[in-house]
Length: 347
Image (tube, rainbow, N blue to C red; front, side, top):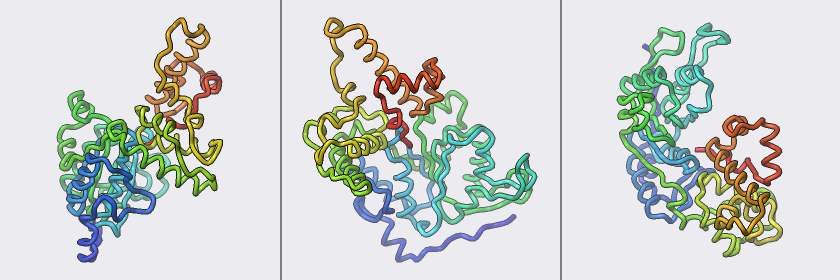
């Protein structure tokens, strides 16, 4: 058995960072912007367990900030000087995830021209963040269970047992209990992952944070792009607050970026709000108040926006779901003035 050395941290440094409040030490690019009591309580819980080696399962809809919370847990832990390695389990083709996690030996499969370490080896002494863990197949789930139980594994095609010291943080936007009931997720692995559950609320339940988030994104985009936008008026802000934000904070960030870049002046106004938000805010028009063409366009806009949300803006998937060719779908989106890019939010 080969054992990788662990990373030791200065105890004084650990004590100084372990219990940082929600407004303190963060990586420069990732921070929670919030005044919401529920989120602040969640962050306090995260800070209390950050210094432990406990496995954490972060749940929440896409775009709520699961990766940001994983970064916070790592930053406030004794492992903060070692790597935080990320892997999106749903982003890999079938059969690739096992090799990505555990590595492989030369000749293990076609194309394996050299030995390659996996994410567990790369994260030794640090933290491994497994996003969309529900996408892992049952074979990979069994191997993950062994690592969590015994902290050891073999590379694909290998016989040498490797032992590592890795803290696992998993995240999902699906209900794993339902997946267990359906037989697509191992019950024993669920309980191994769910040692400390942290559930991030959707943006529609923290509407009081929208102003803070809009101002933060507005300043950042204006600074990066050199735009002179520095304010949003009450009317535009009210529209953003009224919208349900199915893509959560990531979708709001994309919308604000578009508004700033296309703004007609230094202040964001109702005219700058993306059309899909305006249409969602408006009441359904009465049938006699519009013609057939307008009614059809309104229906198609709602229908396609819903499909874009379900498939996260992936055009090939949306086209297959709605029964259009990609070319026809692009033309329809252009005709209806729908920006599919804003639906490409992450977890």
